[in-house]
Image 1: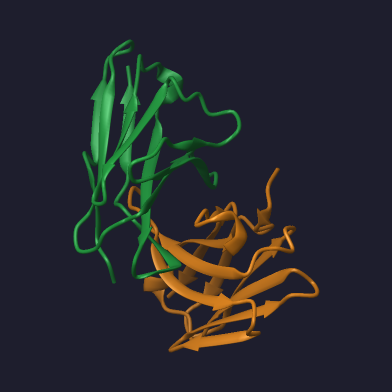
Image 2 (image 1 turned 135 degrees about the vertical axis):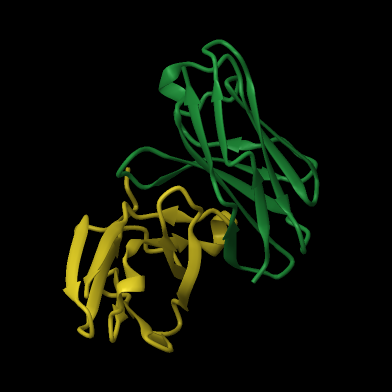
Length: 113
Length: 116
């Protein structure tokens, strides 16, 4: 049972444009959300996070938006750069169930120079 | 950010043998470590959660006798794949969270296991 879903397996964007990666979740108890970036044969690296008490968090070119009523979050990258090409995973956690993070299926982003 | 080191990064073993993968938190004490498995083009699937000094909690469908997890210290967790079979070939990743706060998990580099 996939509690965190990323319905777009891949996305291609022109360099300089905005990349928007989407993530949906089903567990209303999730209260912390993260985005990870992963290159092939490497472990994921943390990118940005958001707590359920916020609806937006920004860090440089990366902004995460959270819509709790829709159980939806998105990651915006602007401007997109070729080095952003990677697989992006969203992850969610519920405080009352410990530190387990549940991951989406990932979206492979390709930024075209 | 905190550093989690996973070793080996790549291992090839014969069917029927056992393989041990180590996960170390280098600059913090990890009270909780997680082991994930990733199949090609699929998500990271949580296998088990281990807390230092206690038995691991396995996710549904994960064979605890096949995937032995030991978290004997605050800086080391090990995953042993026992009697490995070709279908165990996968990318295994550990992550750790600790006193830095429960708000983030730090990942190791992953281990590519190939069973021949």
